[in-house]
Length: 215
Image (cartoon, rainbow, N blue to C red; front, top):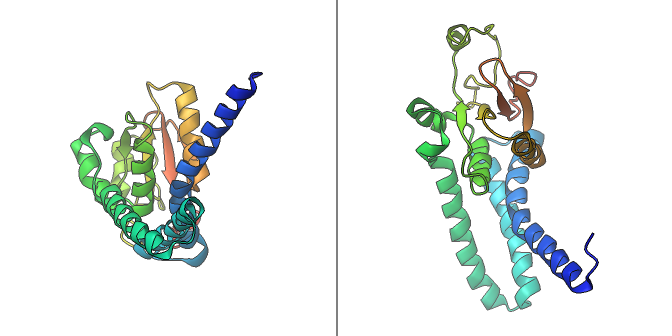
């Protein structure tokens, strides 16, 4: 316990500021997932809705910090919208080769649902050592891996053209880091399972409306 009042105040400020920094990312990703799951939004409209919710939140930040100076807030919002758009494009089109198991996985990355890509890129900001081990699969891949083939899998491309599941490496990582990975993905609204069928990994997925019970 922190007994010094000054230290307690400093700690409280750090917690509050950290929450305020993290909250826009939570609103962006959880908002996108909510629109996808509850209102059946297509991938990019769902993300656009998440960005709009985030922009509203950031507008409140500006008003709280600088008051209702319309011209000033409007100018700053223009910059914020450009930054949000740039981040969204970056998050959905790029992943470093250091964060994928192989070049084959890197080539499959664009087939992953954009909301999953957004969630992964945001996590990489905090965890530079994250490794994506699998994404796009076909029916025959399960046999090649020595696993029972699945009729329905979120690793298959769904009717919207995107894969709704991704595997994240857990081998060689501490259980604390793996636990925090699970907390992050679940906190953002994704479904998470721990699998060891083809190597220990986290199976992170997004609901598919045409295969609602698939994993």
